[in-house]
Picture 1 (tube, helix red, strand yellow):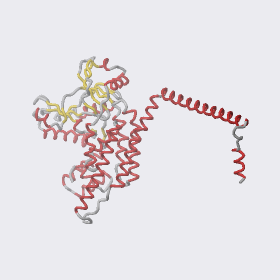
Picture 2 (picture 1 turned 60 degrees about the vertical axis):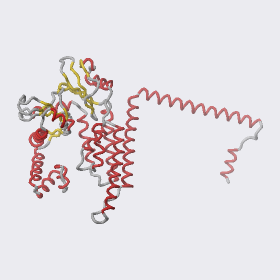
Picture 3 (picture 1 turned 180 degrees about the vertical axis):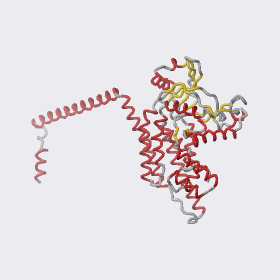
Picture 4 (picture 1 turned 90 degrees about the vertical axis):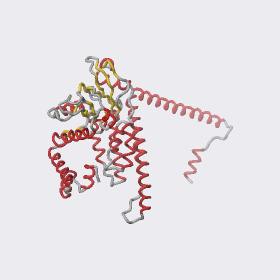
Length: 430
């Protein structure tokens, strides 16, 4: 009751129509208008201030907004995929516990979930681009570790890279070299000859020397977003691991953290390419060519232009009377030399980075009618002597079919007892 009484006293108003009521109404309306104007003025000042800050710090504001958007895309698809697996992915029963029809139905259901999840992730990777495309390309190459539905879905990302505009490329070249495209080159093809997730390559002609060159230019926003993208991918993997403790691929995000910064500095391409040239200088019998590096900055690499086509282009090989089995054997020799002898290993040897260039028979010291052209030297791994020895012993045991030695060297190399899975990964055979 005391509360009610006080409330009534506070809320007591003059009788309508009285002078005191008119005075009260006028005063109240003036106060209300005054407070409205104050709120409006404050809101306008706040809006103007925010807009002014955004305009003055446009780059920072844009970066924050874009980073939040990219992270939200990744987080959204991670939650969708995790929920789909949690709700719709059935356990595979043990052999003999269910009929064959039931087992096939369960496998079909699992496959559908894999495809659905992979498609969602692929769309998100394509939407964000850059580092995310690189992640999808890594996934596509893990056929012996990940479900085939994931690998097949991600394979389309090998050729789904969006080219940067010529203006954007020109800005990157000017910022990194201090010269415009016209100052550096007498000819610069507007259409890139190759587009990858991190960079694209244009054919050009140097103005000073008239030499035909290939110019590798990094996409302008890749470096800007790389740190936040790597951090987001790491958080995604940790979330998946927390939901599914059996998820064993945390090493993939760790690998990206270590390798991507090196790939984003094109000075490493020049250093690594020159090291490979030196390593193979004494092997005149191996038909390996590495383009000569002319100039490198963090985002621009100018190198010798080398004609050729992908090593898996069989029609091109037949057209130039090149034996595919010889090409295959020499690729094996190159990477065996890198792996077991030199210990300096190219870490991205897909067909897009291995070209074949025709040569006239007998025109080269190696005796073949082709050269192997090794491209993209951004990522190498230095293999310790002990690893090379143990890895050789592992392969020797695999070739002999010595199960005890396979188990022993698998344990030494991988630190696990999963020697069967390790053998499958190495050999590509079940």
